[in-house]
Image (cartoon, rainbow, N blue to C red):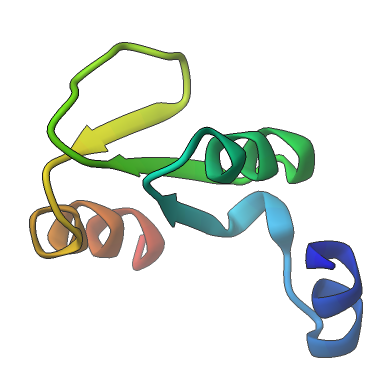
Length: 68
């Protein structure tokens, strides 16, 4: 589904972000080569995944990286 959306909308999946709170969300990010933000109370380290307690807490982090 992400690849179909990328094709239809002209998105660069490698420059995209997946924000979620489930393992499936992180799996999607890995499958499409996107950066990932894991939302929730648990902080576990995974390469290429940044943990935040909420989307509000992650927003400035993401924006700093997409506006460069």
